[in-house]
Image (cartoon, rainbow, N blue to C red):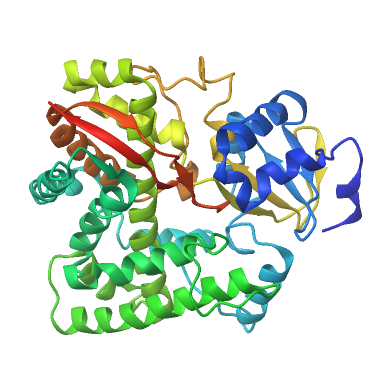
Length: 433
């Protein structure tokens, strides 16, 4: 970072900066992060955060600003650094292991055009709505089985631990062709990858040291790669119609993808496709418990379920940020950016922007229009959004007619993570219809 970032007019107050950046802040979004985001939107919507242990970074909090940044990858690049914010020690470790021209993981989030376009096109047709709809019967069978299991509990359960982490995992792994017996391993690695700052999801062998989070992340990636190397080799020998086969047998510029690109694809889809959906489903149930009028409304009119899904994604915004790096000197919002500056795109803030959403802190399943950007925007818009929406719609179609009431009966707990975060525990009481 360059010295110009320290100008007092741009600087975000320390407590606000910590609320936006520190992983532990996201364990209490209502009291910590959302009030901080509201302050930023009102007082310093594009300012510089200085937090001990982290490099200075611009915070983009407004809906329109994030749209503009995401539509301009020539200036705001994805491929110049890790896509998520790490403390300085972790960032240093990741730069060390990524030295020599290769990354820890070659995934779409790290890429810019033209490479990004070529790699994304490998699966773009598979993820189009018409293609995804062909999987509806398969997903509905999984949803029915999951709901049956949920309602087999004697009234009370932990909605996250007993249900929400398993249904999306089963869906995404079935699309991959990963057998059910390997799902516990995939679940553990997903939690380790996205929750390295959370004591409950850290690897047992991790020891406290400055770059421990990055080491845990790297260890999880290595374990994923070991598994997916074998999966890709098997799918090249015996291809099927699953997603793993599409990726393993794809060719770009006449060549098979390298193992780093194949594994990057597999890891991105397996983890993001599971964790984001799990967080959204859990958050939606909590929101319906907190707003029983909304539960009654959707139970009385199941045609509102697609709108419920969109509002849940906006309200929860499970992806908390992505990072961009400025490629050239550039003026933005009247402030001078320089090559190498980093920008944190704060999606939960954008999705509660008062200039875009009426009563943004209210959970409203009839919200029209709902211009959330929880799936991103521009070339990096989430490729799996249609799968996520489909599996959530089907789940609620199977679940909501069978329940009459949901109550939170214990303390909800959230993952300490600033990249992808959500509920890790939600004790509830469910009254059947």
